[in-house]
Length: 202
Image 1 (cartoon, rainbow, N blue to C red):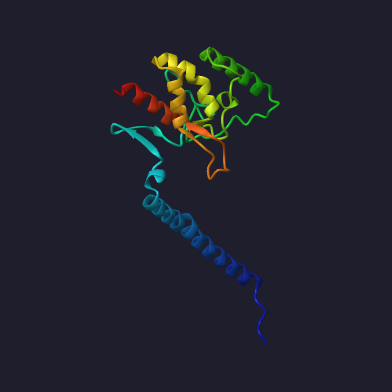
Image 2: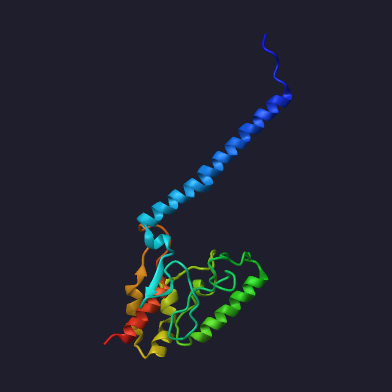
């Protein structure tokens, strides 16, 4: 007749099993898996794995997937940012304020007034994406409507026609991903670089 297992021996075996599973899990999912995924992404998608950096004249001027502040009148302005001190990819996040928050309502009203003051020749209501931050706070895109709302200011500051600026917007407009995901958009950095290129074109 087999002797009964002592409770202490059973606990020790269970503890040993738990420790072994923990070590294996950390090695496989905490080290091996991330390293393999990093190597694969670097080999298959080197630009994206490197942060989708935008380089001009050998200098990194930004990222295609991270918004940045543009304040000069000759540039299109991005969405407001609540990430850190603004557009900080290490502190992504929104305001976390609900639609009934007085703080959010007051801040949105102030932003609307500021956008209207910056764009006195714009027609129609201010597009909502120009006065509200995204969930990440680093959205690099604005809506085509948001870009066209700023077209008159940008054209005036650069001595261009509004139709020429509208043509650049249309040329850089992207549709929904796969035709169904997201909304039409324009990358602000890409559009502003196109403006600078147009200004230096013969």
